[in-house]
Image (tube, rainbow, N blue to C red; front, side, top):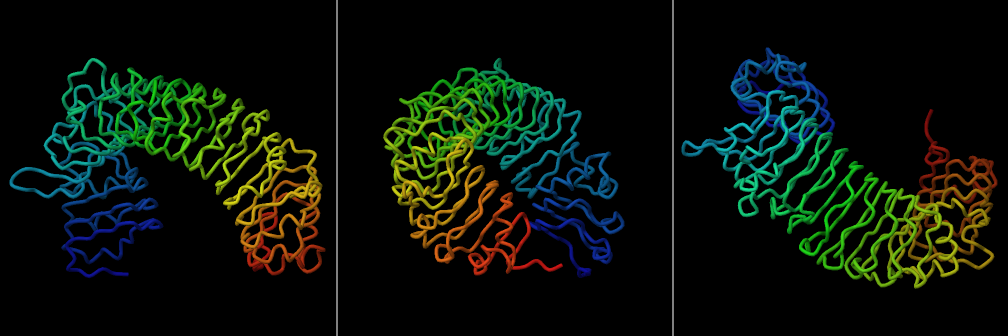
Length: 503
């Protein structure tokens, strides 16, 4: 493919599989002055330098592999672009995107600081003049310790900081009078800090920026506190903390952070509970803990009982109690309790009946009580995933001995790790006319599926590590083949059986 020679400007955007730019296609573009490349995550190379000699402006944004290659003086692509004025004349590591000049003053929509800006220890003063600068990213700037002496651009709404190995805090606690970061003037709405191994805390004040709506902190192993006064920004909506093993407390309470919608805490070994005041939240949607071994339970008095939609506790080995009042969570649609304490008990009052998704593992007491309470009472349930670890007494699913029935609303079932499961109880499936997907894993004694008439609606079947059942489902010869031959997609032990893979 050859591009027309008169071209003076090219913009390439959102080519997710683009890997390289063909030099031959650029060879006649002697008038090309501007090249813009946005959001091409797999792109790693530019045309050869001889194809870019006329270029005056190069803009690159959200192309991580290409950014790596364009590191000043070091990247494999640097020799191709070093002659371009917009690159040569800018400060080290800075690319400016969409920079029109208006009445002698500079304006900018987005700015990206590329990695390995070794000499950068504060924001370049030139950025302070960019009154329309709204997004900025810093990556691999080992000279940064804090932003105490810097003025953030006045319109900055999104800030990302990644792999700045010596960053200790975002704002020095001694700089309480820093006007740029005061609650009245800061317009920052989204802050993401990742892989900063020296980060200790963000600020001494939770009101550092009252307009902050999204806070993400990942892989900061020395983080001991978010804000030293134990308060969060009052307009915060999304909080995501991961890989902060020293952190013990998110905040003292949520009494002022009433707009918080989602909380995700993962791989935080010292987090024991959520702050008080969850019941004060106006629109809580999701609470998720993952890899928090110190978490034991949720505070009874502080849980939102009417608005919460998703509640998850994963890989929290000491988490041993669901809220007793969980049956009054009228908006709760999804519950996942996965690899927590085997002592976890089924709430005495039962579950709310409007669940759409239920996933449990390593919870034999919950499973047994749920069977007795009645799965079929979950009349809105669409997705059911059960790991049978500890359920050695179960030989059939659903359990035939007590006439266990599944809710007709189910569209997807996955069962796994039932070590003594021998057969699937057909009658328990007889009302599942909407079932589309069935997955069965790690059930070494399972030999049979429900009758074909119970599987007529099924669109996908997955069987893995079930040797006896796999033998029974062998094409045309197995005793179970007639039950599954009509299913459009069947995969057994990782191999696609229907439609059959061609050699």
